[in-house]
Image (cartoon, rainbow, N blue to C red; front, side, top):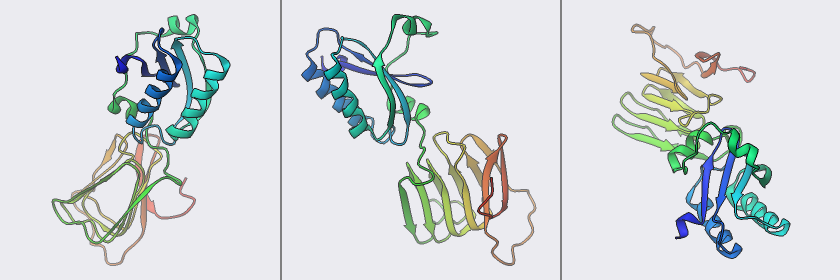
Length: 227
């Protein structure tokens, strides 16, 4: 069956590609191209060591699959080589084929410095959700009851008074910044913070930025050298 010709299995350090033993190379190439396409944006920005097992490949075939990974996945491929028996035996448990959710946990969005962005013009009102697998920039306010969820950074050119979640797929380098930062809940990766029950009224807008350091969310007046 087509599904069994090529399997992707995630590891801590990269990706293992399992090739069907008796499959012709032309089919393996086609199926691998489809697997990469079906993974969507989850490879983009990742840095991977890729190993394969199963069917043996010639140097020419290895080169063709490596070029396919480089050109189609959007990931930086550090290496591509056959997995040895020692490497297989060293793994603690038998890996399972990755679904999109599992790939997302391993290959979280890394394009927070120059990755894809979504611009939203206007105010987000109560009950609205703005979600994107990249960075989000809101040219307006985020009212209480509205929610912004981004795989990367969240920047609000106005008041942020709703719920915000940056680095939603696990990237703790993501930041949240706003001209007036008063969220009802602020989360970066899996670290959550809430405002105090009583907060002084804001007379003027003071740009602030939230970021993670030592697994704690810090909020301070915006300075370019916040790290």
